[in-house]
Image (cartoon, rainbow, N blue to C red; front, side):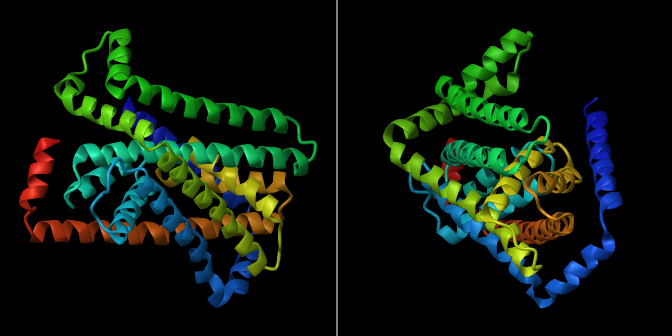
Length: 338
C-alpha cells in the first residue's frame, strides 16, 4: 500500500509537470534564458545567503555549544537539506542525517536531535510569520479572485495550528505523544519502548532549552525569518535581470506561498510539478507576467539541482573522511551513551 501511494504521488507530480510544460511558451523561456547569458550564475547567490542565515539559526538552537566549526555545520546542513530536496521523507530524513553526521564529529546524538527539533520549530514559526505578512499583502494586490481571501486565511490558520501542535508535542514530550497514539490505535511500538530512556533524555533536553535559553530561540527564529526574507530576493533578482521588474511585495507573496506549495508536495520527489505549477499560479495571482513565472520556475529548479549536487558531494566527502579515520575515544563514548 505504501509503495502504491508513492507511485501515485509521483504520478501526480508528473501530471502537474506536464501541465506546466503544456502551458509554457518554450520559445519565450528560451529567449529569456538567452537574455541572462553569463549573468545566470548570479541566481545562485541569494540562496547561498539563505543557507548562511539558516545555518546561524540552527547553531543558535543547540542546547550547548556544538563543538564544531561553523563551516562544518554549514556542510552538514547543506547535505541534510539536499537529502530533503531529493528524497520524499516529509523533511524528516534530512534532519536524521544531520544528527548522524554530527555524531561523527563527536556531538552526542541527544544534543543533535534536540537541536534539530528546536531549529525546525523556529523555522516553522518564522515561516508562519512570513505567510502572515504575505497574506496581508496578497489581499491588497491579489484583486478580486474568487476564494483568494478564504484560501489565504485557511493557509494561515493551518500554519498557526502546526506551530501550536509542535509546541504542544514538545511540552508533553515525544515519548508521551507516541505512546498515547499507540494506545489509541491499539498498537505496541516496540521500537519506541526499547529507546524509552534515550527519547526521554531528548525530551528533557528540548524542554530545558526553552526554559534556559528563550532568547536563543527567539534569535534562531529571527535568523530563519531573515533566511525566508532573503529567499524573496531570488525572484526579485531574476525579474530585474530579465528586464521584467516586479515589486518586493510581489516577490514576497510568490515566495511565501511557494513554500506552502512545496510542503503540500513533500511526498513527491523534489515536489516535482507541484512547485512549478504553484509558482505559475501564484505569479498570476500576484500580477507577474507569465513569461517571468515560467522562466523563474525553471531557473529555481536548476538552482535546486545545483545545490543538491553540491550537498550530495559534501555528503560523499563526509563518508570518505569517516571511513579513513576511526572515531576518537570521546566520540565513541558519546555515541555509546546516546
